[in-house]
Image 1 (cartoon, one colour):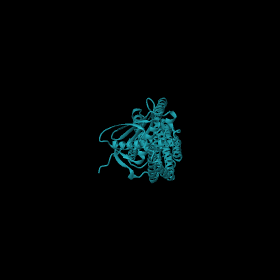
Image 2 (cartoon, one colour):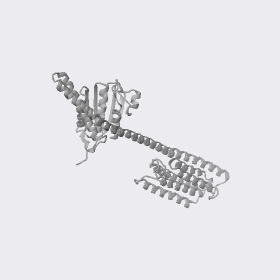
Image 3 (cartoon, helix red, strand yellow):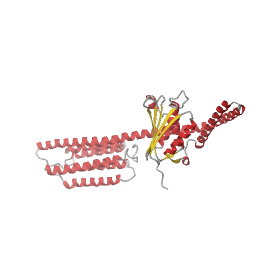
Image 4 (cartoon, helix red, strand yellow):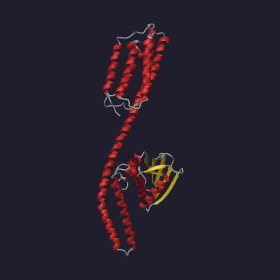
Length: 422
């Protein structure tokens, strides 16, 4: 949320909260300064108007506290108005306490710095012009302080400048530093949002491409199925060939089923396709489905968690994502280990193999679209990309790690669902 006009919110709504805290410190410091100068240093000040200003600022801060409890966002104009009121209050206090001769007059730099960092240029310039004008007028219009003799007055002025420097340095370091950190955090969030948007655009494009490819592949698959059936009929006396042709027909049938699902969904998952299953039942179902797809893979599984197990929302895209990760592990090595652990909130799944693992470049680029380490096997670099996108969309994460002793370790974390009461 950047500031491009007066109706946009300030970069972080917490800016007003920090201004509220800063004003608390200012009110406390003003009360201490007024009472200390008037009674401890015996420099008479017009207490009534000055304390009235401090009281009004305290009321403003109370209203700000109530405002911070409201759900709507803080606007740039609202934040600007609060800063302007603070600058006006400082002008009135300085008018009653020596004007430009007051060593605390340089506190006018604080609202200028805050406005320059958080507000649009127009508002920042208005604050700057007001502070410059107020400072200039305070050089001619103010109530002079009744100071002791000149030597003591100069010493008090120097001491006041020292205190003002300390207060300004602390406030700038604390407040401005926190605001700058908030702005950097928001910039990182915006960069992540832009990256997510670009990735979603790629996913939509891939979904459209996949739907078109599914339509185009239906004809050659149907032809292959017919030819395989005819070959089975013609070579009925060759059991070995018949067995191989049956495997081929089964694979063609599986491909047609996948394409039918892809064409039906066209890359968009339907709510009615999701099921709420216990974690252990879902993993058992997924492993059974995968073993039918990869009968040659050697699989070891280990599930750890409380029974009865919590529930997970079993969507079609999640199943495809996990099956893709299983296939990647099986492509890297014939033996695959699956280890699952869960509690009431999170499922952690470890997919382990003894393949070549991830080198530095692969670990850095894993999950990028069209990046693959399986060029020799005809990989397109889509499986890991889509798996990453699917798991992250569900609130989980996928990490690619190197396994001790060689191989790859894919760590998947998924949030679990709490079933609603009937």
